[in-house]
Structure formats: structure tokens, C-alpha cells
Image 1 (tube, helix red, strand yellow):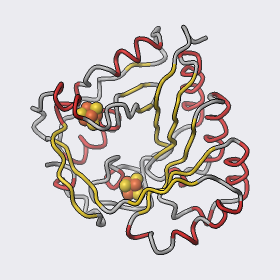
Image 2 (cartoon, protein in one colour; image 1 turned 135 degrees about the horizontal axis):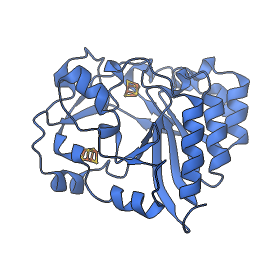
Image 3 (cartoon, helix red, strand yellow; image 1 turned 30 degrees about the vertical axis):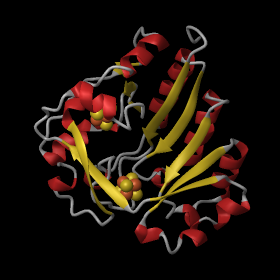
Length: 253
Ligand code: SF4
Ligand code: SF4
């Protein structure tokens, strides 16, 4: 049971770390990630625990990588709704695989009121109207975000002022769930990918293990303070979308 009427404002998690696109500087490090599919049993255990801790989660974003690459994407959507009946739930996708999804996928989204958040990248823009035909037929609500530019904001030396970066950070409430742990955002949660491929040393130890004896209030309080990873963020530099060459300077300022 949740300890009181507690709401977690936001939660995101990866169904896959890999992606079928390869965007330069992808903020989730997908071009340099190994193939990795979320295990359903891990997910169910985590959702059950979160549903004990929190009365609801206002918004849940099922992400990747490209979540449509996961063969059980419909099951994840259905189970997310089962645990959180009142949440806004969306699948965040680049849309390219939508034409290959079967009717079970679309029926599940329709039945469970799960929407699509489609990031429209230049490489897929011309064909997007054909990608979404089935979603429109099933009446799935779609939210489009046109993406023309990407940003890099990693400070490899890790000497930023964490209070300052956290205070100014637009991602500081992008709470990220990974393997039973709640992180402030994608940076500490995915630090092992960045550290392995970018030669940085971002701490991944700033998290709350939800399977310990914590309360919702502990998690909310933790999320309101900077992460130890915040010293690795800095003022962003922007560049136009292009295909990644998997070079360190696509991420590091
Ligand atoms: S489509 Fe999205 S998740 Fe995939 S590489 Fe591009 S930015 Fe990353
Ligand atoms: S590590 Fe801190 S400053 Fe960087 S994106 Fe996450 S919350 Fe923001």
C-alpha cells in the first residue's frame, strides 16, 4: 500500500537501449548502446513495487531506444495500464516501425488508452503520413514532436557545479526507472553506456532502490536534490540532426 496519497509526477523507462535510427548525439546514448531488451519479470516486479509506493504516476513514458523493437511492447503497455489505471501513458517512438505493427499492438493501445508520442526526425518526415495510417484507423491519439536539432551537454571533466546545473536543468524531473532503481534522469541511469563508450566516468550510484524499505516521500525528496551525476552536465551546444558517426564529441561539449 502507498504510505499516503502520493503522486510521482513523471516516470520514463527503456524497453530497449538500441534503436533503428542512429542519431548523432542521441540523448539516450542509443548509437553506442549494446542491444538490450527489458525483461518482463523485472518490469512487473518494479511496477508492482511502484504501485505500492505511489497512489499514481501522473505521466509514464515508455521509451528506448526504439520501444517498438521490443517484441512484447504491447504487453508492457497493457501491464503499465494495469498497475497505473489513472496515469497518462504514452509510447515514445520515431514512428518508422508503426506500419509493421500488428493489430494486437493497436488494439492493446486502444483498449488501454495508451497514446503515441512520435518524434519526427528529418530522415522520416516525408513518409510519416503513411507510417501512421493504422494508428489513425484505430483512433490512437498521436502527439508529434518535430525534431530538427540535437544538443550535447556532457562535461567530461565532471567539474560543473551540481546545484547550478540541477537548478537550470530542463530534465531534472525526467525520473528514470531502470532495474529496480529510480534515477533523476537518463544520465546516471544510462551512465554505464556512456562510460564504456565515451571514456567518461559519470557516477551511476545516485539512485533509490525501490525494493528497499523506502517510502514515497523518501523518493520525492531524493528527486528534489541534485544527483552526483549533475557535475557532468553543462551548458548545451546545439547542432542539426544528422546520422551518428559514434564519435565522443557528439556527446561531449
Ligand atoms: S530515434 Fe530517438 S532514440 Fe533513436 S537514435 Fe534517434 S534520438 Fe535516439
Ligand atoms: S544529471 Fe542532473 S543536470 Fe544532468 S540532466 Fe540529469 S538532472 Fe539534469
